[in-house]
Image (cartoon, rainbow, N blue to C red; front, side, top):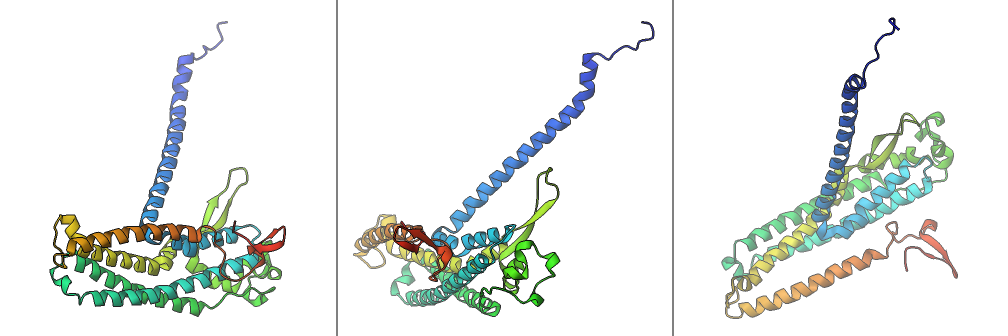
Length: 325
């Protein structure tokens, strides 16, 4: 018919739709590249943390990051168990206080050992790395003592965490503002005064977007990164101080073996002393790594020496501490 309009050809239709298709494809590609980069950054960050915490890897996980992750998971739950929340926080506080006290004593002994080592007559003729490592060890041990004292003071100022069946309503927000599991009848949950005192020093709130179908976003908690670094810093100073002292001692004693010389800082017997030292050091290091791994392998992260119902399991002969073979 003469009145009919000509239909667009397939080529014309495809050319009109191609910009939209190209934009959608580009957006998908950018999204995939972003995800790959995020996974890559996470892997690199995890590797850096593992290398940096290698001298105290088990204690870092057992006393710092794992308890905080457990606490963040409990706090982010839609129906948090207030009793378990208090138990986890109290366990972390007790364990951290013990760690800080141990770090203070260890750094004090280590600083005394380094100061005493400077009086050895062999230091005057030693390689420059030996006094360099020992001065590094001394300053790290002093920093460990000071920072441990500061963190012990903070924990004592915040006070102990004790669970109560009910909390004072004056310490809580209005019931309408509390989630169902965090009402005064449940002990306050994350709104309890004790939890609120510790929250800024441990956890950080983040907003997570939900799926398009559910709509909106929800808030959850994650360990606050700068506070994770701060709480593990005294142990880091102590561990690096020990490594620096041993490195300086190894350079002092083992230099004849490294240079292929028969004499060392102790004269003609330097080679024999170096071989004996390196053999003992290597065997002791292997035993130390082996024992450090297995001593924590069967211990649950929530154990703190206090018997609680959530730390017990039922067996054929009744309840027994959970987490053991």
